[in-house]
Length: 193
Ligand code: 5GP
Image (cartoon, rainbow, N blue to C red; front, top):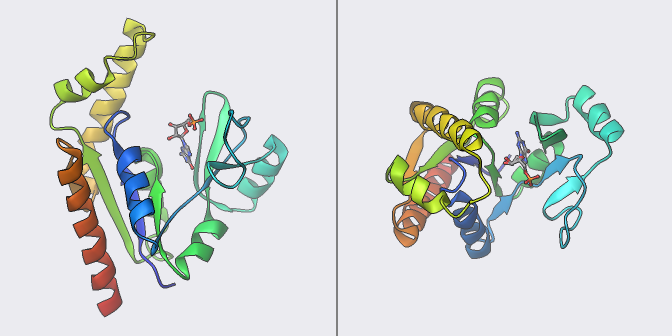
C-alpha cells in the first residue's frame, strides 16, 4: 500500500467538511473515501460521488462479508466505510476518511495491523461557545435535541487524546494551513519508513 490513511473527525458544525473539500480540491495525491448508505439519494447526489447507494439487502450482505471498516446506523439507515474501496485507493494515493469519533476509534483499534500508516486528526472549535454560536442558525432544534447534541460534542471532544493531531479551527485559513502541514509531514515520514 502506497498511501497514508487519514481519519478526520470533529463535532458537527466545526468546519471539517469544508476543510476536507479544500484538501481534496487542492491535492491530486489525496482521495476521499466514499461511504455506502441505505438511505435514498437526495436531489443532486450521485451514486459513487457522495455515497454508494445500496439496498438494505446489499448492505447486509457486504456487512456479513466483512467489507466495512466500520459501520453505524443513523436515523434508521445504515452507513459504512467500504474496506475494498479504501484499500484499492491506497495503492495509489493517500486516503481521507471523514468519519465520526466512534467510527474512527473502531478503525484505530481493529485495523492497526492492516493499516499501519494511519493518522487521526480531530478538528475542534476554539471553544464550546464558539461552536454554539456557529450552530445557532439551526432554529428548528428543540431544547432536548440541543442537549443531546451538546452531550455528543462533549463526548467527541473528550476523546482528543486518542488522536494523533488536534487542529483548532478558529480561522479557516490557519486551520487549513496546519492540516496541510500535518498531511505532508505524515506522507513524507511514511515514505522514509
Ligand atoms: P447524511 O445522511 O446526512 O449524509 O449523513 C448522516 C450521518 O451519517 C452523518 O452523521 C454522517 O457523518 C454519518 N456517516 C456518513 N457516512 C458514514 C460512514 O461511513 N460511517 C459512519 N459511521 N457514519 C457515516
